[in-house]
Length: 484
Image (spheres, rainbow, N blue to C red):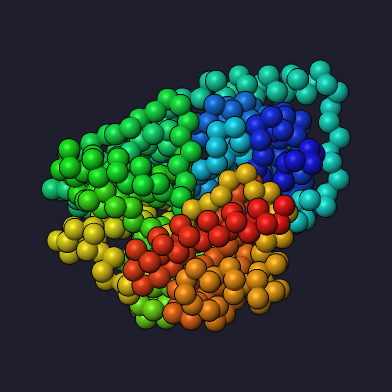
């Protein structure tokens, strides 16, 4: 496999130019061989569910996925262009493995592949085991080319609708009565999200008046952990122009929600996650270390558990807690993706990131309480988070900076001097999470998907969290320059 291709926080990520047909097929074949060796694929399985997002490179990669599956003796159960959680749900329902071609929120010149067993998203242990397997021996080139051509033809033949799409929509139309959102005006920022039409369909089914906004034929890399002031200004303009109660959207593959309130202010993913868990009546919540501490400070849940960043870590912890006897188990990430480990409110488990559930949850909460979306966050303790990233920073540079701050108390003290506080605690569960003496937080972490250094901040006010973020980014860049 190409040395520049590898697993990120969730699935394989790489530049499109490095994801050749042979590289893609190699990962697919190793995945299937791993499932067979570990007994995670039932004997006699004949199909693998395959879907893709709206990136320009995704159909060609899906064709290469098909070629790899054919070499392993499997046919494609084509999900087509669907949100990643719809692909995962189809795999769970059919008892087959699944492969989703998506780069999620990263720029369009990159793409990726997510792997699912019949029980859900693969774990980090699966990724490590796959990396140890020998590269598969390919058929003669002319034979592989023929299989690849079959894949291209099958991708082109896919209809707009699929069983995966139908079942995913049904999951939510059965959750709530029709007309539940009657009287609400909701804008749907469509951009290039693969589930943009599904979101309109669901909200319309529930009685909301839907205004479609910003549909794009070009791919737009929406990152729900790095929402810009321009994005919020755009949402605020839409809200004022169309008298909206909310503007909702997702990232490219539909597993991370993007929600702005009636004033166009972005609702952070970890706030959405906590509110969704409250709305569902979850007892045990799992979330990465980067999520807002309002979760624990709310004292609304029987048990909370923190993990490294990445859905595989959240899933692994949820599984362990369920096996230990915990009930009503769910999780979320700071990006807002919600994961359901156990059956709740009539919904079957879906242990992968999903954007639809948190979007519906906060809209229903707003309707049930007859409150604006902006009032919902007031139900939680006053803890505000901000995040952004510095691009084009290699993982090696990021790790060197983090090691310097973690190992040198004086360097750490100089780094946070702009806050007027001293560091009171550091947490290296994932990156470097610095708690200050006033209980504010600065968290540095290299991205697992792209050459970026992410910075998360948390404080008792939005203004302070933003101040920490802006000045923290400046301090990071200054320190990086000093290391050159």
